Image 1 (tube, rainbow, N blue to C red):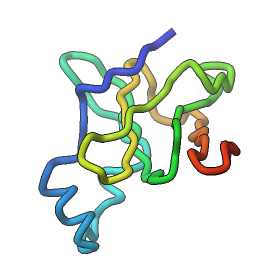
Image 2: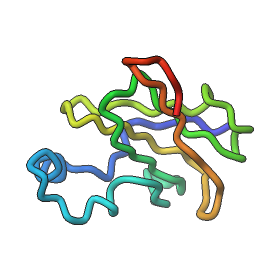
Image 3: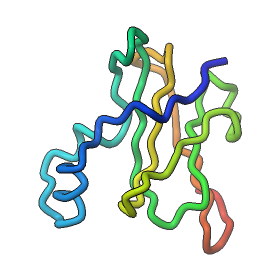
Image 4: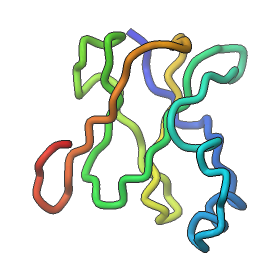
Amino acid sequence: MNHVIYEKSLITDHDIYLFKEGTHFQLYNKLGAHVVDFVGMKGTHFGVWAPNAESVSVIGNFNGWNRGSHPLAVRWDGSGIWEGFIPGLERGLLYKYFIQSRHTHFAT
């Protein structure tokens, strides 16, 4: 089972500045799923804006749609962005974000 690595980020401090300002016009290059190389490992970086989430994880065929196996981490900068890198995941896999609300505790 692949684990999530949190040290890999496609999002820079400048991206966060533009995002918070509302002028980041290429955010699609940072959020979503992107296949990248990280310290010699090919895998997929996931990023999603979920400012009211209590927890966020990536679920898909690769983990049996298990909502607890690949949790993402919220960024420290107050942006509400959750992210993580999962080694070994290639392009074309089915996935969704499992988002648990911190207000209603409902999942979406």
